[in-house]
Length: 226
Image 1: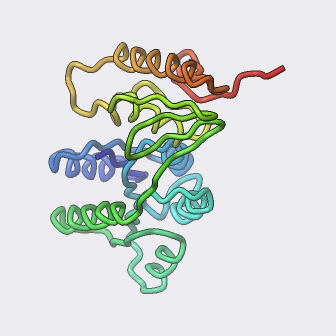
Image 2: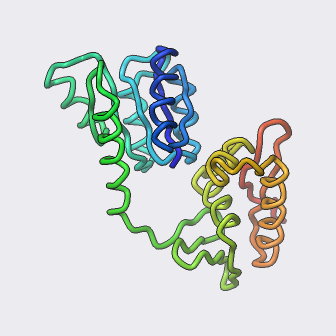
Image 3: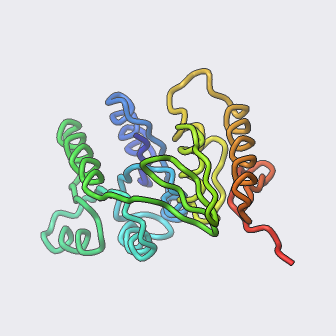
């Protein structure tokens, strides 16, 4: 499970990431609101730990933006503010839980487990973007009446690209999310599975293509139609 930590106090952000990694989560930190929102919108994370007071965009605005985009990633908000109204404001903005600093690692991890368990309550039959549909149960890729089955990693890679909705997904994000702690995975692994997916998109005659953006990563784009 991949978790994004958005916290401008770098020592605290790194300490939270260590707590998560010691509990067998994958975790990455963003140290300002603008970077945090950009990463949160990538679709690469299973949960977000989000500070309220951030340089750039604050945590409340990040939550409101994500929810307005129908992004339902579980969010645990962190803040030094302790009033009931502050907690109510965070929850009303769309956060799943609210925790005040300082906190104990055990309670923090329990809160993370709680918000990530809730994702199992939502059942999504398929994902779609452009002219393709991806069945989340059968892992079949469909387009205009044609379909092809995807392997687990093909499915995981395409899920990330579809979830990004045309935004760029970096190779490193693909490796972190799809291959996790697999020490043998490399950028060549991502390149190979993108190549497999390009062939399958061609097989179902989709107008979507996986574009490579040098030094940045991949994104789904519609081909020009005459």
